[in-house]
Image (cartoon, rainbow, N blue to C red):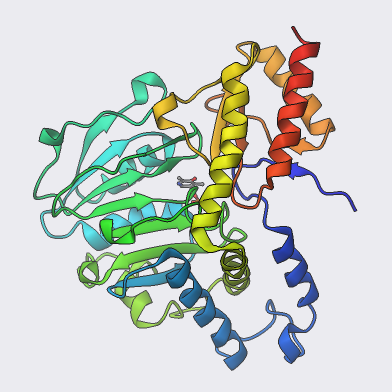
Amino acid sequence: MSRVYNFSAGPSMLPEEVLKKAAAEMLDYQGSGQSVMEMSHRSKVYDAIIKDAQRLLREVMNIPDNYKVLFLQGGASSQFAAVPMNLMTKSGKADYVLSGQFSTKAYKEAARYGDCKVVASSKEDNFSHIPALDPKEFRPDADYFHICLNNTIYGTVWHQLPDTGDVPLVADISSCILSRPMDVSKFGLLYAGAQKNVAPAGLTIVIVREDLLGHAMDITPTMFNYQVMADNDSMYNTPPCWPIYICKLVLEWIQSIGGLEEMERRNVRKAQLLYDFLDNSSLFQGCAEKDSRSIMNVTFVTGDKDLDAKFVKEAEAAGFVNLKGHRSVGGMRASIYNAMPEEGIQKLVDFMKKFEAENK
Ligand SMILES: *Cc1c(COP(=O)(O)O)cnc(C)c1O
């Protein structure tokens, strides 16, 4: 067996320990005589799995008691609609910052349901940085203020959160959830597709402050209604059973290495290796501006499209896969989520050095 270093933006690598545990438990989960894929979601044995996953997420992320954790489906993209349907119901207004493609999609979707305002955008600079904010643009009566915390396609991250006062801050954390400790109490709502740092595709996590529940628009589909999902412990219908189980294993793995503090130390060290190389390279350059750099997605170019394509091809042949940048940006992107070992980055940097020497 030989495994590649997978730099995909998502679905992405899972920790090898987790895959091995899932494989060992595949045919007979803890003496139940069945795989987790096969068991009833109403069974006692599955109930323990979903409860454990939820408890572990609360522990690992230090989620305050006045927040609900929901395990949903439909991806982060469904939340682009679910958030306004559930939250944009008092003044009917929401403020959005456009820092990339996903936040733009979120804004466009929400604008179908109410009065949405773009308070800042870095589109003119091809989203190479988090836009500067002018708090005078913020509307104090907005029902929420939406940001995308880590911009997967461009490799940027908010290093400082906007001060929105009493207006609940809502963040898409799909590509940075569980990458470092975060103060959940600063947010009204957090959401994430699981397929980057948590589990296989199919699970969507919502963490929502309780006072924001119970105000959904009448038109809200039952499946999108946070209150209904909270009242039913995320089991109004069949939940994504298998991804929730893998989520539990991933959280156990994070706890076993020392929690999110240790996760952050590792992620910072990994990203530093790559950025240090890019900053000193005579061939490669990083795309994101330095004060906005992400530790999860690292974007870079050679400045020559043909050479970029050659690099991606040769890298793949050497066992470094999915380094091609997003189709809207071009160049390269190394997504270095939690499960990417430091060794993978060290070897990638060695490979880039060799490529640089051969292509001067
Ligand atoms: C991947 C991603 C999405 C889209 O997620 P889906 O689960 O595929 O809908 C949205 N936002 C961010 C920040 C992402 O990285």
